[in-house]
Image (cartoon, rainbow, N blue to C red; front, side):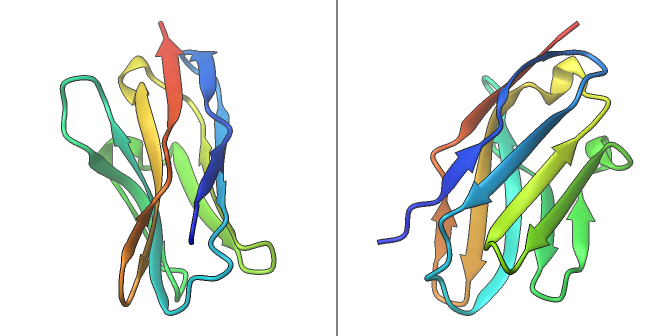
Length: 115
């Protein structure tokens, strides 16, 4: 049974940085893409950033230039480096692994940015 493990959330002041990491997908085959989504209170879950198996990246307009997604194939991890954080970045961040057969989700990690 696959269990994605996320780490790195927390509280930070505006302008600060956080680094999220997701692992636990070593046994997933045929991965098409990895990504991070977030859900703010009262809002729908939205894509923040994704990276394909060919290392092509995609970012939400609101985070372009501030967030960077990367993957480490040797360690089977996907990381989201978040810089210049804003209060509107607050939410629960979820790791997503999309294979040819199934979507896998992490349990979520809270990110809180105070002004």
